[in-house]
Image (cartoon, rainbow over all chains, first blue to last red; front, side, top):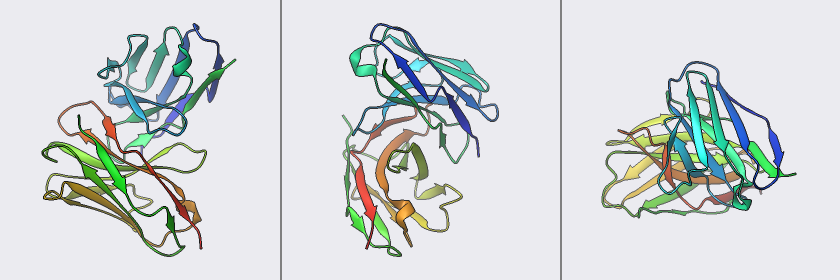
Amino acid sequence: EIVLTQSPVTLSLSPGERATLSCRASQRIDTALVWYQQRPGQAPRLLVYDASDRAAGIPARFSGSGSGTDFTLTISSLEPEDFAVYYCQQRNTWPRTFGQGTKVDFK
Amino acid sequence: QVRLQQSGPGLVKPSETLSLTCSVSSRSMSGYYWTWVRQAPGEGLEWIGRIYDRGTTNYKPSLESRVTISMDTSKKQFSLNLATVTAADTAVYYCAREAIYSAIGMDVWGQGIAVTVSS
């Protein structure tokens, strides 16, 4: 089973600031990585797939990068609705696995 | 726009079987993995398993002995059965779809059902 480790666990920032979230895989997964956003009480929402492709309707301030074992999700300028929990997930092998999440909260 | 509508009980007794159903609004169920994911209170997301094609399944190994996922394409539904539940199975359960032939990930999710295991 592939283990995904996200860092930091919590990121305390202010609106307008840049957020950089990391996800590291325990073995190489090429670009088979997906990012989700989850707001309180809601289902996860697909943000980025194939490590760097934005899903339909996702604002351009969200961008993903990386390949192999190290991946990054960047939010260029935080909007109030971006304060949420972010999960990475690998789709290279089964079972699918998720990282433990990074919470972006208000400083 | 495709929607997934979940149904099932919110309370299950210990040692009994948790049963949930996900109804799919699309014309066909072909071309997708139909997936179950859960989230324990205050915890992260856990992939449970998936079904696709004509009923091919894959399960998380640690749950495999207790999980059964099935599908009824004529009703456009797929279901989760989790046997012999304990308090550790208390979670919000989500259904989702993932494209087989694209890298897009789980792009449509159900609304989630909070299931509590308690007597």
